[in-house]
Length: 211
Image (tube, rainbow, N blue to C red; front, side, top):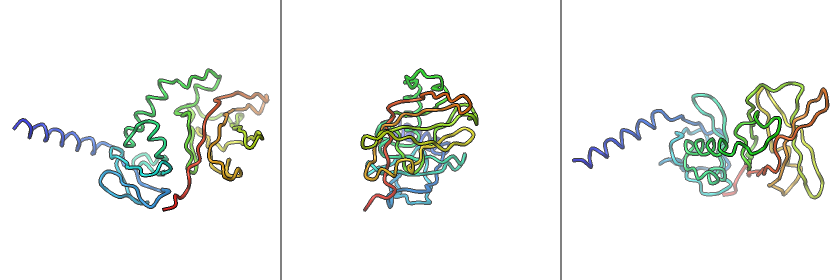
């Protein structure tokens, strides 16, 4: 009898979590299907953030939209592995905890404006970096990296509170899918540069994984 009560409580608890979990609609994925929970999901399907994602290839990626907030995120097998996460819910918990504890370990004038910036950035199509304050139009953001012994500079696109790492910034370097970058901001009025972060690793994920 006691066992049945415990099982009933667990089922009710799981149902409660499922009911209050955010759902995500798959906009794009670089593989034909991925098992999420008990379902083999395809582009256009919806899944719960509490459901386990069964990655079968470390280069797999899912671009999905939060049904409630309409915020678009990219989830990757490599980033889930980095944070020992099985579901989107666990990934968010590990991600926030890791970045909160590390405090970025970079004491620069603009480090307090950068939120949720991991040491390794996995780029499927675009990686969005959110700022805590609105972007001043006098400031621009750019990166530098070395490719075949040549130092390259790339200006980043930005909106009111975001700037973006797009794969197009790197795709002229054919055959290379890993880069070590430094992130800067520059005040165009007084021509002052500030280093935000150095030695960030960027990994380009394939848009399509061959079956």
